[in-house]
View (cartoon, rainbow, N blue to C red):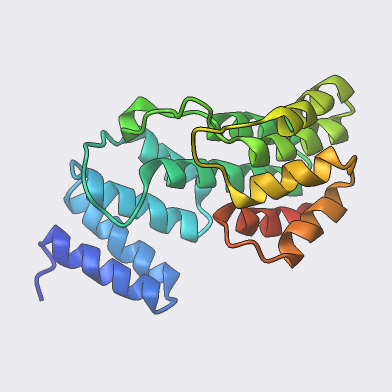
Length: 207
């Protein structure tokens, strides 16, 4: 009823997304962003819809141009940035572009200032390190592969939050497991309630 209202278009996008209509959600979010390019809330939702529609490169470009401010919302900017980079890296893996995949996995571990998220003292990067290890395995760069596994084994954060999937990954690697497919299957089959577990199920398509 009020297509010029960014809030109305924000809600309409949420509606289409909730109704499993990602293309219509993206179309609505895109129109809203073009009408309100200075709104970081609108831009963040547009990036999210691009990610849902597997337009990872475009989503990252939008996120790179946002200037976030402290605000309440239903989308965590850094989580979206991290997941989009990981998903884009997995896309590169599917076509054998291992070096390019590593670039996006490295980027997933960063904390851009424009997204207004301070990096934790001991950020939990075990999932991205596991995916990096796989890329270096395929590139036959064993020293980098082992470096990634060492990170997974030695990671500890007694004073902060750690991911359930990452914790289980450390247990499996500590037990001497180096079979990428088997580790990924275990994480999937145990149905860990963790977004990283969902990312691992997508990674499974590469194995």
